[in-house]
Image (cartoon, rainbow over all chains, first blue to last red; front, side, top):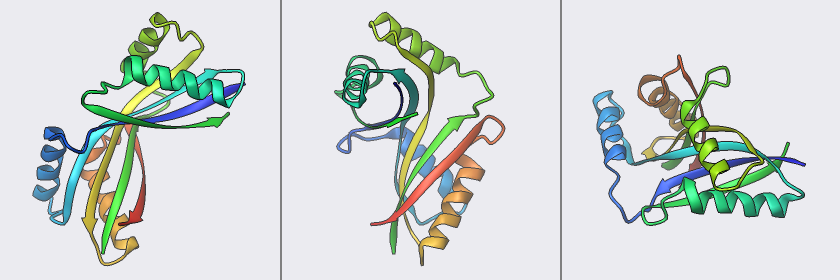
Length: 83
Length: 83
């Protein structure tokens, strides 16, 4: 079965996010003054073949832990759906 | 009222995504051979003050068009929820 995973990888809330601060400053320069707490992370989509949803979930979990997210600085969250 | 926006910015499907290809190669090196069509984009969260949900939506739309997404190469999608 084919599954699609949508993965979000964000910096931990406790950490500063300089890229988010820069984006926030940019938005203020454009006149969007009421925006705050901007944080920038990654969004990764992928497709995979797996026997069932639990197997697909386990595989994406592995991918996040081993390669996609740096768990010292980032947390991940994903959703899986059958294609 | 305070709203929270979750914005995904992804490369257009028609475009090559070298970063996604690199991630896919990395996953294969780790033994995850059944992963394909990996694409990497940005996930941005922000909070904003607005009179109502329609106003908040308009403002995030503006932010995406003017700063966050490069519409030549990327498409954006967002969800808004009251905080």
